[in-house]
Amino acid sequence: MWVFAVLIVLAMGGVALLAAGRGAPMAPAYDDRPDALVPAGRPLRPDDLRRVRFSLAVRGYRMAEVDELLSRLARELEDDRPRGVPETSGVGPAPAGLVRMMAEKWAADHPAGTDILDFSTESVDQVESSLDQWSRQRERGLAADEPDVWAAGAYLGEVIVRAVPGARWCQHAAFGELPVVAMPSGRFENPVGKAMERYDGDESDSVAFFLDAALAAESRAG
Image (cartoon, rainbow, N blue to C red):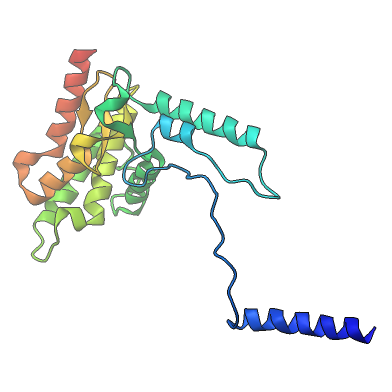
């Protein structure tokens, strides 16, 4: 019994030495987990979700349920792409919920109130007035650095989305990181970029005129 007790003490001492950094370390563990293959430098595409592979764990999720969810998300991404636009065109879904939330919060916090900023086409006159006032301030930053300018552009785009059935937020490689509105006719409108132009320019960059022209063009296309 004493022999076994001594062996146990020696074994515990060896474990303590290894834990303290002494002795030969254990070999580095080999990471055999599969690569998720999710791109970080661009919006997700349906094929990205179909290629995803997750590592297995003792207490993990049911693989069939995960595969079904990924298949559903892939189908929804395909449905969210503007009709008639191939996947290779550089068009991808934009975070529509986030853009809409930005627009609604700006409208709710604006001094004009939601009675005026009600996402009607007439309410864009207030957006025009706000951008004009901001552009006249002496100490003002660049349009891309002004959250209010982004929010005003989001509001302008949300007016278009609500006024034109089938219009939706998306992203297009031609517009960089700016969310744009894909029209049912296949045209793209850049309301955030237009708000920035109005902020940096003058009345000739009218966002109200931009809205009227966008709606008229879509009406002719329809």
